[in-house]
Length: 77
Image (cartoon, rainbow, N blue to C red; front, side, top):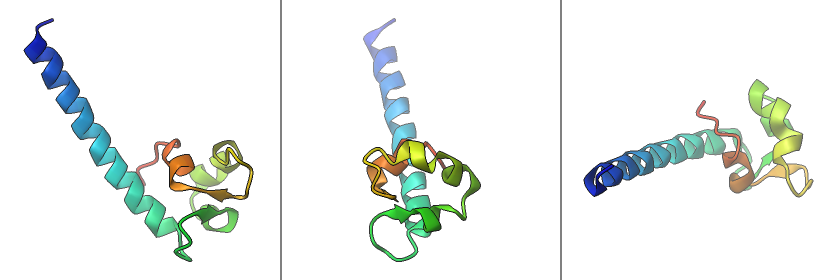
């Protein structure tokens, strides 16, 4: 595989991950109803998939999802 092809692939992957980051950022902000910078169990309950994943994503078991924890879910909507 040529260097140009590798650079094109990396560029495409970086662009895609940036788009996903913005999508998940928008979703995070819409779920963070109290603007605390985290998503509580109550806030997560309105999103069925996130609600099911909450305990797994809450790595430090504080009952809140930080943006970093939330981002690992890979949710877009």
